[in-house]
Length: 324
Image 1: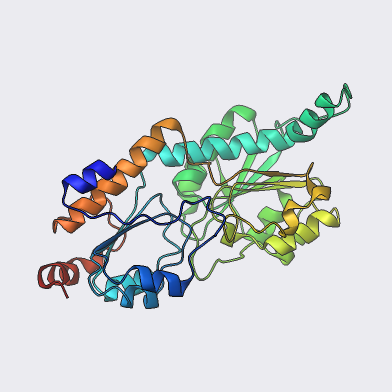
Image 2: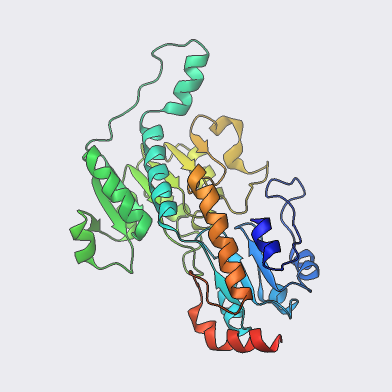
């Protein structure tokens, strides 16, 4: 995508790779970096606060790779005339939904400990369980949650959902029952998180909610790490209050080596992947291309295809033409 940006007249300043051992940029580091920037192309790693944006008087746009924008202060961006875009292409939510179901199957069939036992030559030492007849609880019933429910029909499971923004009629049409969160946690054999992060729902699944779960139940997170209290989850696992967890996301990312969920004594009960649920070879080409196009269009004074804060538009155009 660098060639497209250079062809559009952009000077590119590269940041640290996502896997760099130096870790996440601090707010002060970001403030120093963005002073001369007209545009930022970002992932889900760094936190872009009002202070960072105030340090970038020339900033026109922030182009986010992926759907979630919880690490960008959208209110501040809108007030400062900075247009924010993302890449919510359909293939992304389809990939995440499939990944969540794959996690459920991996937990039900005990694939991770089974692999370990098989490599050690311990034959017929692991027994998995059926999905059929189980109850799956979806925390969040947007595009991804709805797709998960659709995929689960083949497994003949009962599906519950908690989402205060969804009408019961819509859930009923999908064969899903809307219930309060505490009931979902208590009745589900698999709890799968599919909500966006807001100020109100950070750590929406904490010690209280985990204590409601069956000791044979599993929790799955392919959404955002901030939805789940990791310390409370580790405690629940260590005390055998729940059976296991499958996690593609953490808060922060990558998780520190001291994160209790990475401890060796939980290795067989916690399946961890590096925030790749929404990735595929096709998406790894298309999403950066859409992010790049969003950025270039904004720099030209045109609206990108995907705008997160459309109310910025009048202020943004003034900001763009004056260069203030």
